[in-house]
Image (cartoon, rainbow, N blue to C red; front, side, top):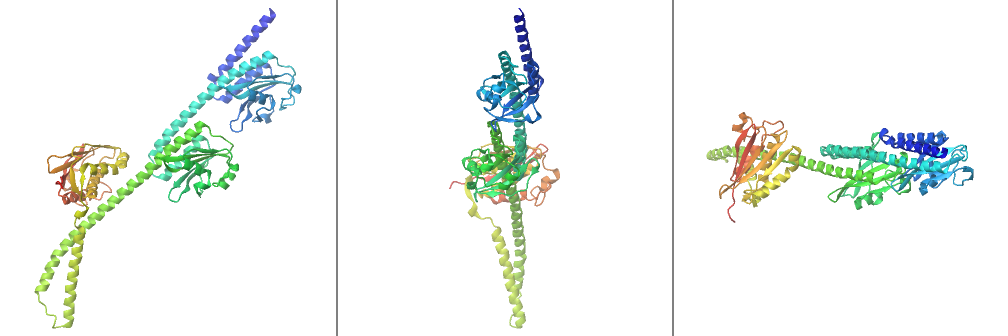
Length: 571
C-alpha cells in the first residue's frame, strides 16, 4: 500500500509540475523569462545543485547556455560543440542520458568540478533538436531512471511551450516588419528625390534586419560600374566613397544573376569593396540583394553584421521586399524628375514662343513706317553730285534703310508657321500621347482622367507637337485649379463632316469673374507663378490651324474649354 501511495504522489507531483510549465506560455511573453521559470521548477522537483538550458546557435552550430541555476558566473553564454559532453551528446542524438557517476562517464565535460551526477533531456522544435535541459547534483547516484523519465516529460512540455512562444514572437516580429514595410513603401512613394529614397532604404534595412551596416550601390550602365550612394550604420549616415566594377566583386554575381548572394565570412572572401571599413568595424557576414525594375538592374542593397551569421529565409524575403519597394520608388522619383524637367522645358518653350511672336509683331510694326521713310527719302530726289560728303551720307542712309528692311523681313519669315511640320494624324493619337505625357503629374495632383473615344478616328492635318502643347497648357491650368485633387475629362465629338471638337472639363474652383472677358490676353494670370501666356499661345496655335479655342463655361464647380479643328480632306 505504501508503494502505491508513493507512486500516486510521484504521479501527482509530475502532473502538477507539467501543468505549471504549460501555464508559463500564458504568463510570460518573453521566452527567456519562461526558460528561467522552467529551471526553477526543475531545481525544485529534483533538489538539484545546478541546472541549465542550452540552445543551438544557428550561426556557430554550437550549444550556448541561455539560462542556468547554481553554475559559476563564467558559464553564462558558454559555448559547447555538438557531441561534446553529456549535453552535447544529447543535443546531437536527440536522446536523453543519465549519468549516475560522472567519474565513470567518458562523455562528461567538467564544467563544474563539484558535479558528481548528471542527466539531460533533448529540447525539440518539430522534428529538430534545438537544445538540451540539463540537471546536476553534487552527490553520486542522485538521479534514478524514473527521474530521467520525468525530466523527459518536463523537457517535452518545455519544448512545446517554447515552440508556441517562439512562433508567437515570430508572428509579432513579422507583423511589425510588414507594418514597417507598408509605412516605408508609403514614405518612399511620396519621395521625389532619388538620393532621399536611397537613404530611406538603407536606414530601414538596418531596423528591419538588425544589421550593423547597410549600403546602396547604384548601377551605372554606361560605365558598367557600381557607385556607392548611401551608407549607414547604427549611428547614422557615413561619409564614404566607393566605386567598383561588378566583375571585381561578389556584388557583381548578384547584379548579373538578379539573385541574392550571401557570405558568412568576409575575411575569407576575396572582396574588393569596403576593405578597410570591414576590418575597422569587424564585419563578418554580408547579404547582397539586387534592386531590379522590369528586368533592368538599378543597383544593390548590401547588409552587413558583425558576427558569423547565415541569413535565413525570412530575412532574405524581407530584404527582397525592401528591394522591390525601393525599385519602384527609385523609378518613380526618376520619372517625376523627368516630368518636372519636361514641364520646365514647356514653360521655357512658352516664353520663347511668346518672345518670337512679340519679335514678329515688333518687326511688322517697324516695317510699315520704315517703308514710308524709304518712299519719302526716294521722293526727295536728293542730288549726290553737289557734295561728296553729302553723297556718302545719302548712300549710307539708303544702305541702312535696306538693311533694316532685310532684318524685319527675316524676323517675319522666321515667325511664319511652316507647313512642312504638319502631318495627317488621328485625333485619338494626339490625345492619348498628351495623356501619357501628364500621367505622372495627374497622379501627383490626385486627379483622375477620363476620355471618351467618340471622334478619335477623325483625321486632322496639324503640327502634332503644337496641338499637344495647346492641350498640355489647358491640362496644366486645370490641375492648377484643382489643388486638392479632382476629375479631368477630355470629351471628343465629330458634330459634322467638317469639324472635330475636344472639350476639356475640370472640377476646379473656376476662373475669377474679372478675368473671363480677358482670359486669352497675354500675361494675364490669377495663379502665383503663372506666366499668363499658356492660353494666349494655345489660342494662337489653334487659329494657326484654322481652328479655335473657346471658354465655354466656368463656375465654382469647374471649367470647360473647347478646341475646334477642321477635319482633313481626303488625300
